[in-house]
Length: 286
Image (cartoon, rainbow, N blue to C red; front, top):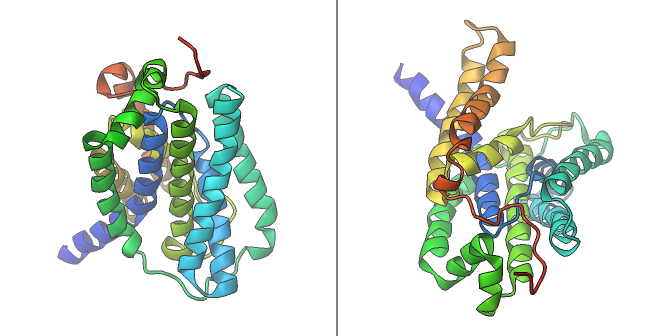
């Protein structure tokens, strides 16, 4: 029994690692006023480029750096479309997810079924670094001038601009930061959690990361609990297959995601959602 519990904790921590990294990045993007529904697309691109670079170079860390770059570049595209062109943020994010999934599927065809030669352990430095990042990002967001600037661009961009804040620059930086975090989250999947490349290997984790952002009330510390909770659900969906039909178990994390969103949607404004979230802004606009 003790062994089962310890195994469950380790596996839950492993699955929660990419969820935490992706949700922390999304929290910062949304705190600045930009919602990015392209997390799934950025994660899958990160997973592909991490695997390819790690396989070619033999260094998983190099793969993670490539994953961060891939996620950041994808997020930069979303930032340009939604911030500079002022397009609908929801449509842009969904398009980014479809683009990422399609592009990764095409580029990754020659890499399927190849095991990674030099993989990181499931519980690696990324797991502990993610926990430290949650604390650090919470401190920055709530106890520094930078955090106040980020929150002000998400709450009232016009007021922030009146105080001399470059709203577009802050939003660009936060969105790209969110993309790099999502890229690393995807990279963890292909160089540590399941050291290989498989099309669609993110399996909806990006959408759960977005749900965790809302579930946590846009708070980095609370995102830790959300990531662990959904990580445990994913582990249980595999461990209980001997007693429950696997189809029902595979749906369990996503069913809980829908329930969480339904339970919190009515209290969205009261749980920390930025007032200007999802709204385009033009310099000088009042």
